[in-house]
Length: 202
Ligand code: HEC
Ligand code: HEC
Ligand code: HEC
Ligand code: HEC
Image 1 (cartoon, protein in one colour):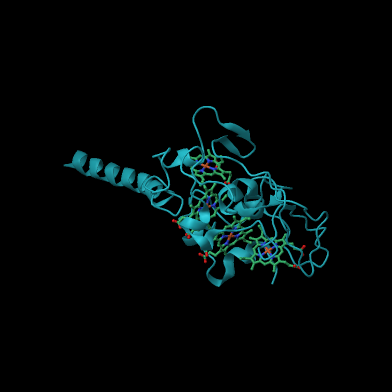
Image 2 (cartoon, helix red, strand yellow):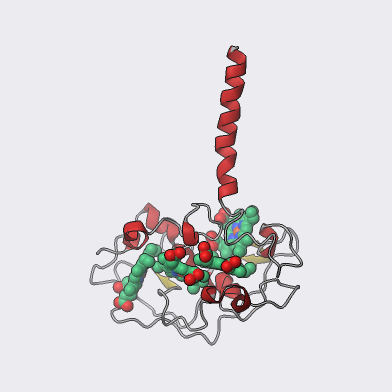
């Protein structure tokens, strides 16, 4: 009896450990395993990563999707931006997002020619980034002289591309793998603007 109970507890613990992995990327907006445009990679990871012949991209191992050059973009200008060096083009992991989201490269590398606009027009971001939150610049409290952003702590550093001293990118707000299982593939739910207030002092 005691043993059975122990087994049940173990089973429940196992379910508790394995369940979140189903709640993550699987069935999220980034699970393309059943997408009609996806003719070459029927698994979840294969649309973006590849086990062999992948590109060495910092932060995104075994990258298996075409990458945009990132030229010809219009970058955020802003009204009161205190940044050391204003970016003239997107870089880092934002280029990976934009390889699908700017709507100019096929979603299915090596397969169908379907572009983002045909799948979800609202999800086309760029090449005009003037109306999007700035990306591809260093999170630098000393550059933001007006004290409007917070001193980087462990949470903020974990949101930056490259960690401490790194850049704000698309992935500073979004979780490409939906690990946090928050709507909109966000890193943290933006109820009460919690996402914005992670970095902004308002
Ligand atoms: C829609 C594209 C996309 C899909 C699908 C995807 N990834 Fe990623 N992956 C990325 C991007 C972009 C990065 C760069 C880092 C970031 O933005 O978090 C990354 C980074 C990673 C990293 C290194 C950083 C980290 O988070 O540990 C690993 C490992 C990884 N992916 C594994 C996987 C696996 C395993 C799957 C399938 C279950 C998968 N990815 C599905 C786009 C994708
Ligand atoms: C990872 C940190 C981070 C997160 C999360 C974040 N921001 Fe920012 N944001 C910044 C930094 C850094 C700047 C540049 C601030 C400066 O130079 O004064 C900035 C700039 C801005 C600006 C432009 C200000 C100007 O002077 O033009 C606006 C508006 C803004 N953010 C709004 C938001 C909103 C709304 C959210 C939530 C949806 C958000 N931010 C989430 C870091 C972040
Ligand atoms: C392989 C192409 C591809 C890459 C790479 C990619 N995405 Fe997506 N993403 C998509 C597609 C396609 C959709 C729309 C899915 C739909 O509406 O059915 C989407 C949807 C989204 C959504 C909307 C989620 C929702 O719940 O509606 C967000 C946010 C997003 N992507 C952010 C990102 C970010 C940030 C990155 C990089 C870190 C990224 N994506 C990389 C193809 C991609
Ligand atoms: C400062 C935070 C922040 C940054 C940086 C950011 N986003 Fe978002 N994004 C959001 C929020 C918040 C939403 C709204 C999510 C929701 O309500 O579902 C959103 C929505 C989206 C959507 C869904 C649009 C729709 O209506 O379906 C896509 C796609 C997307 N972002 C892609 C990107 C890409 C690509 C980048 C980088 C170029 C990026 N985001 C940078 C915060 C951000």
